[in-house]
Image (cartoon, rainbow, N blue to C red; front, top):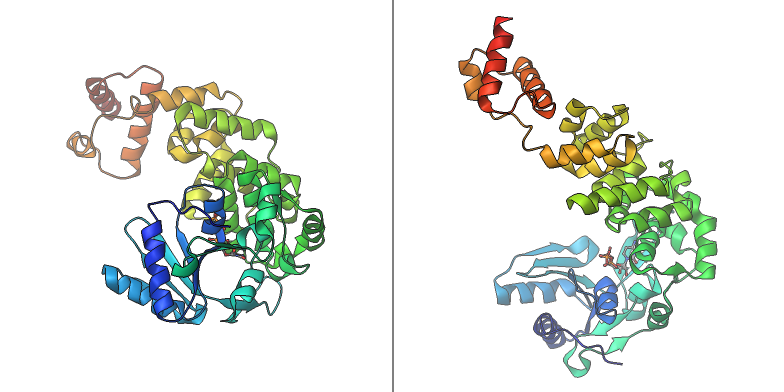
Length: 377
Ligand code: CTP
């Protein structure tokens, strides 16, 4: 079976296939991009597998185009940043996992080993880019069948034990494509779910970020499979999820940060950025709407504020007037009035914002009058 290759990537793939062939190696488009082409979805990047030295192929392709190439000889990979796509080149490899949850030991392997080392059958298909069969689908694991049926199937019983993050990857794909875990795979998932606890918190957090990008379905699927209780994440009720989305749709704010924070609000286990920690702490400290606290929360987290507090219509109002309530007076002008920069200035600015919110200050003149009055008090 031949897969139609869109015009925007066909010349790139043909060229890479030709370079590779001239060096005596067959090359393929593999993994997510192969899956996405079959699904007729837009490609985010390009993953190439070479049955041979992928680094040499990447270097030659980059040289032709005057592009930079970053090589990782220890992983047998190279990355080229093209104008429209990032192209990842990897030599066919086999992987062994010394202990559950550890990073794999990578060794050169053949085509079959490279396909069978992968997470799910739908991600283990290859589309040839070699000139003599350009576009041909090579599917040794019946991935196409699973793709058509909408199922996620692992290659072997120990897959989730080797790499427990595959459980979270499965959640991501299930949410994105509406696929379900095949029966045996679901049994392995349940049996190995506790291995998630041995994975570093950094890697788990990264996967949770990806899941949050899939929208509320990502959080729903995560909860359905009880991952939240294994990882001590919050149980986020549907009511909260729906409100996050409602606010996002009203305002155009991307919900992903709020969705992620909704999972992480009840745990200190994860290495959050200070930014996210600050926002979560502010939200947790909110009882009802508090203009000073809400104004300190970054816009990305407003959907979560809306979902959590009772008088949530205030958050909508805040969003619509937020520019009008921010003080017009500059720091320099305040200095001229005799206020030195620092906590005092910050406090006055907040007071002005509250008065603007209450409608008691409307113009810059009002602000100046207020400051003068305050200084004379
Ligand atoms: N892969 C794997 N096990 C992992 C990570 C990756 O088997 N733990 C394989 C899969 O074949 C996957 C490919 O490496 O398709 C590329 O990984 P990645 O880019 O993370 O996955 P995508 O499938 O491209 O995911 P997305 O569409 O979300 O980018």
